[in-house]
Image (tube, rainbow, N blue to C red; front, top):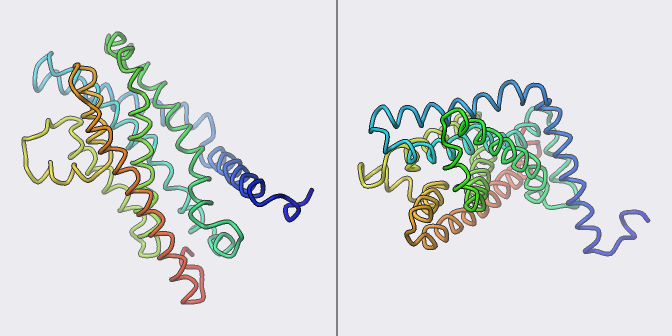
Length: 267
């Protein structure tokens, strides 16, 4: 059966699956297993250990749990999830965006489908890093208590990845494609509540309230402490959905710009 002989729903699913499969091959080419094992994993482990130890030194032993959870989200977002920005980067550097925007599958659907393996592998690496860091810190009991809240960590990863894709896609033709995701990473470290508790600096709280991670992390901390957490989780979900819409708008702007000027805007 050729692609044109498939039913519309079946054809869409097949195209999406092929885009995901290509994303996996793309990830494997960009991040070979050896490079991942000897670069990404140690970096994530050291981030978690650093934030936890620093929290204990600065604020006392009672702050170690707070800092450990913050270190987890920093490693999840700025070390693992951030790799999804390589999806639009690849199209820019290899001048292949025109093939996507002239195809039958929506451009945003292709980019998001190719990003799935990056997100899935990044989350898997995060679990490995968290387990190793917890063992090194003697906090494996705390790590086990985090397990029921992994869906919230997955939601935070999705929101961060979607916003990162939107930022990279929107700025990629302005040669700010590296600056924008890195700026997002530093804002996340500063404003997510990972290390600095809320209600300390007003403008930091204001910025963090509209970025991914902050509300999800607050929900995890509240849930683990036996406090109400659903409102914060829903706010995190709302930010994730807004980030997805921003990504769609960024792709639309770049596609129309490329069509209007008659050249590949990602090149």
